[in-house]
Length: 240
Image 1: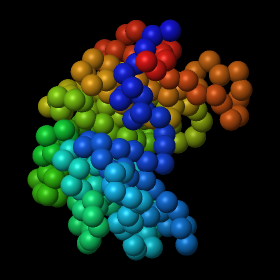
Image 2 (image 1 turned 30 degrees about the vertical axis):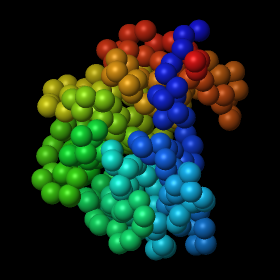
Image 3 (image 1 turned 120 degrees about the vertical axis):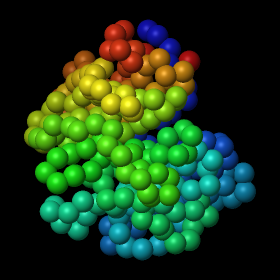
Image 4 (image 1 turned 180 degrees about the vertical axis):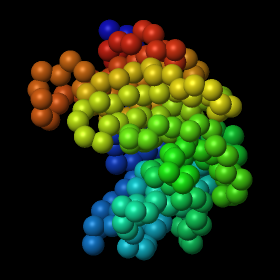
C-alpha cells in the first residue's frame, strides 16, 4: 500500500461539496423543487450555507476560482441538439455571467486567467480554454468524436490538462493528459468505472477513484489508486 496526499484524495472522491482554495468556504449542490440543482456556498467559520443561485435551471459541477471570490458552474441544455452553458457567479451570490457554451463543466487554471472546457465546434469536439472574463476562446486539442468527455483539470503548473473520456454505451473509462500548448494526448489510466480524479500538488501524478478489482458487479466497490503523469506506477493507495 502506498500513501497519497490528503488534498489530492479530497478532490478525487465524488462528494456533494468541496472547500474553497482559501479553506474558509465550502460549496455544495442541493436539489430542491422542480429537480433543479441549486448552488450553495457558505463561510465555514461564520454559520450555515448561503444559497447563491435562485433560478430553476440545473446547476452542476461547480468549481471555485483560485482566489475564492467566485465560482463557475454548468447548466445542461434543454435539448440534446444544443450545448449547455458555463456560468460564473460571485461567492456571495448575485447575477450569473455567461462564460461559454460547453458540453460539460469547466475548470479554472491556477493563475485564474483561463477556464478549460469541452465544446462542439461545428461537428468537432474540442478541448478549449477561455479567458476568465469569457473572452478569447482558444483550442487546446481537437478530440475524436464518438466519446463523452468530462472533468478537465489543469495541472498545478497550468501546463497540462487531464480529463476523463468515456464510451457512450458500456464500461470503458480512461484518463488522458494533454499539453496546454498542443501535442498528442497520453492515456495514463483506464478501467470499467471511475469516479473522479485529481492532480498531486506537485504535478507528478494523479489519484483517482476506480472500481478495478471489485468483486461486486453492481454497485461496484471503489478504491483509490495513484498513477504517475507518464502512466507508470499505477497502484492502489491509501490516505496518510
